[in-house]
Length: 234
Image: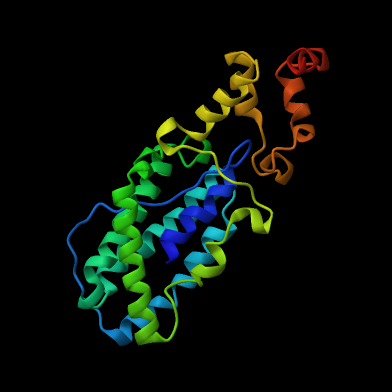
């Protein structure tokens, strides 16, 4: 399911010491269901464009805002485009996606500062998963294709394609907050940790993989020299 899956896919964008495991949640709402099976199949082809938007998003706030605005335009159409059989489920997906978009908007589209605490509600996540599965079944039966790209490949274990397991806790604060806490746990001060978190280039694949060597320049910018690192190592 497009929204359900890509909340996980986009998690790796802001990964430094950890990756975000995004799973949008649902909050209900009124459904419309004015579409037909034929019009729904035409609409579903547009979901591929949304997949492409998610896959091209980076950590630049301007690019994130532009991309998510286009996604928002798509998901707002979901309830009206859906046939009556899946109208309620389409509204659930649209509402869940809007929660995610609003979270990033509140953080000025800076992934590291987004408050994703709503994702910690397992019941809401389960509701979204169930709605997505029903839409997938309907779309496969009526249109001969899934809604968005195939989930099987994109829902695989991140470690199988070079990614890392996520230790991000949505209820534990923003990604930046948790990065600062991790740096403090190895002996850095709050000032040093905050400086590192503010200056890391999350678009650098080496930083995303947690490569300490890629962070040395930032350590220097923050006044953390080799002697300080040696002190921490001891």
